[in-house]
Image (cartoon, rainbow, N blue to C red; front, side, top):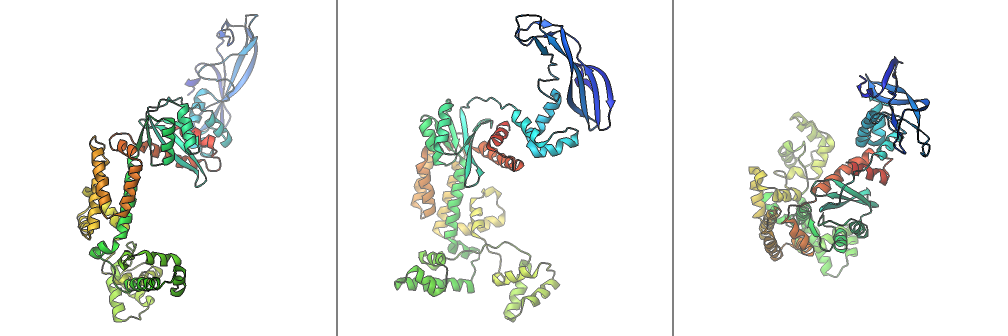
Length: 500
């Protein structure tokens, strides 16, 4: 039970209720003077130290140690007297044994202040939240060398206001440093003070790109492949939405009153614009919002305005046919009557959901619509992960119009570039040429972004380095920020990140 106190002479154990008191003393061996290194056995005085030890049976343990103050035999020594220490058990200026301090540091390293103060008393260790923070800040930070491959990214201390930059070893994931701010000057200054970096993995940030060029002009910059794919997904999603009228007719574009209203509004706005009426006057005459008038005025054809409704499956969908038939037979039938009828058929949802369903006209559809976002997801999903039904929908999407066919080809060919290979630079050049030749304006914008950062993109598709570990550190940082809510100063947050 008290094997950790074997360096002392245990004289007795007292059960004091919630606390177990252990009385002990040092063994009386000679002690080396900390100033001159001369061993001595001369005792100047005795004193008692009270230290907390690891709990036993969920109860606190206090160790009362009778220790000696020694006298140095060398008259010229600057230290006339000194206290004896017990290495590995009792540390200078501490009120806990070394093994208890190790346990406390392990808990506060993971939980910080408040959570540690809630957990440790249940384990028999009395620690307050302020003490837990002091113990945490007292843990020495690891001394890590500047890595050859550096990963760099920013995270928000306070969104839209304050940011910080985390620097890690991209090969091992070890945290190297956390910098206040995310500007080019901050990063460039750190890189100049820490030479030796040969490869820098980053996202598409122009500030980081400029900082690396200024501080390390010969370093290789590697763009993150995930961000490249994410940028392609955004461009592809906008292209799919722009061609909704083409592919939605193959998967079920809504026809009816809403489609007629869209066509009438487009005709009215374009007729007024051709007559020389301004946008603001069109908004006032038609009773429409200014942004709505702008969107209709920019569309060359009414099909460009049509969008597939973004409806999710709901509890009313199984009774769509019944609702449509009843409304066709009796157009004036109320929602309350329909609610009673479908509840008799098994519906157990609310009346508000039914009313919203009817007001949106979803009962007029023969089947659920495919939203632009889901359509883009089909296009961007790995083909081997699609079901048979999804493959059929994807075939209908890609064959809807020449632009959708070209978009599918562009997406698939770019996906093959994300596997690093030495022949990828030539393939990337061919891909950008094909993307510019296709009638896909959003893809043109994405290709221009690649041209502006072509060296980093080329390194990303030829080298195995990536910025994934840095993104993982940022994800864990969000957890740390929430654990330290109300106490998360930058110094404390930086300390916890670097200890991770």
